[in-house]
Length: 444
Image (cartoon, rainbow, N blue to C red; front, side, top):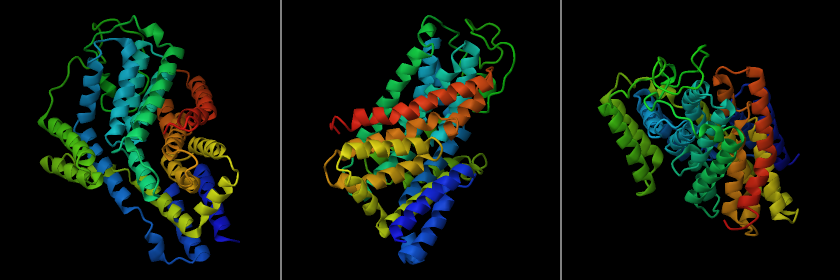
């Protein structure tokens, strides 16, 4: 059996096993890279490890370490409270605040599941208290996370841009970011209209009742009985923070640190991973005891996932699999159809598996026909990125599961069916819309 076929079968096996069993896909990919590389392709272990994405791993470690510190010292809570109070008690604005805050968190480097895990309990607590449709609120959080997820300093953004640059494709990090942001923003507008947002426009609450106290630090929401209906004033609001706690010096320094990372990475083109680690270490040094456990909060499972998958992708390249698939796909003779098929593959598989891993594989498979120049590379990259992430609303994905787990005062079975139905619509329509918007017009 040829190395190309062996590697494709190994890829299918990786996704199948990771879907059925709770085994990290990155670990499976490392095993596949080792076995396929040595037994079928004839590579040495040193050659296999030559594909290890060291720069990307450092970036992942750096940004998640820095974000863990920002979460521990209350900077994230500070950002949420400030954003909610800015709307002046307008109930209709609260879903948009949750969208914006989650987008901001992922844009500055938080992993999408981490941002959703922090904001979803707060958002769904608001939904229960103020009578907001929980499906609307939960999906606003998830689409916010995906909207900010492709900034040039985010995990998704760095992953996509690294692959694109390494493959010699036309690169436009800002275009990828803004395209994903506005696509998810458009979905959020439709959600707001269809799921009761207009009925919230005339309602106001006490502007000081910002964050339910039991949810202020991102803990899982649990039902708390009475008092969860719509509120129209501040009296009797025993489960809210009556005022904003004083801003600490460490929180100010953390905000300065986050801004510094953005400036040094975007303006001066310094390595974001090394810059993030440097800022994180400085902040940790200022309060060493408080942050001694921050290293354990680095998303090591995601580091393993991405490192393993991209190492296996390197083996696929060495085996000639990428060219093999690319030639087969190009043989269809219709690049637009190829792009649509890859978008659906990314969307369907990502609804059950890791979006980060799927993005890497989908873009790598698209490389050969993109290099031919018959279709806009940036548009296809954007479409594949969007199609592979908007489906994270699925209850089988981490983000969708977090929304389901934190829904408050709802019939959980009914809410699960609503979430499943919505994710079915997204999986069916989302890749097609991404293809129609970003690929067919040829404007990217």
